[in-house]
Length: 286
Image (cartoon, rainbow, N blue to C red; front, side, top):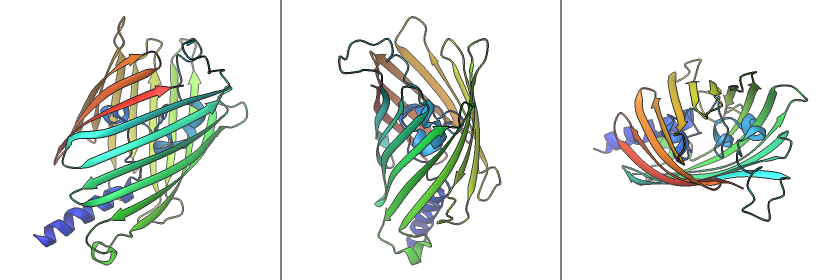
């Protein structure tokens, strides 16, 4: 039994090392974690910091319900927690950019407890548009700590890791008002984990009616295992409801949200190979 527990913990930690961007709000969860080529909400720090200058704060320009908002700095934030799963998790993330969408910053915290094995991730990042081009670059620094009964020698994984990730993002709005994005992320350029670095690619399109289609290919060089994620989001016309769905390396994900003013409450569900999770969250722009 102890050997099986050791194997499970080790495999779990390998997954965390391979993908330190496990932090996700309910939107990202429901969309199959497709954010490398989207990165347009508070989770941008974890998936592609190059998206930080272009985080979507739609609705603020027309919103007069908050007298303190002057349009000089726009922000997005989210809180998420699991309510039915084999693990406990909690996350909070923030992203903000200047009024010209030339520079952006992000910060976040993520906590997971799987059968007594705890992982905490703190992160901060910065992104900026390259001149007047359609490209942006970004950097994120993530500090990950592990706490479990067994020692690092037993698991073969360091208790503490520091990830430095570099991102690149392309963004263009065509003549039909479709917003196209493509992203590239280099995980762990400092090679604090092994194998490293890991390379991710992604692309997305957002249509004028709010439909989003996204595709990510993680670990494209197959250092550990290449996997493909797809996701979609659609705001139901004439309502404040949003529906989302995706495939996380073939595993089904889905969720719904309800918007009021500049805030949203939502729920997400993912049916993974070995387990299921339901999570709830609140997100908003301000």
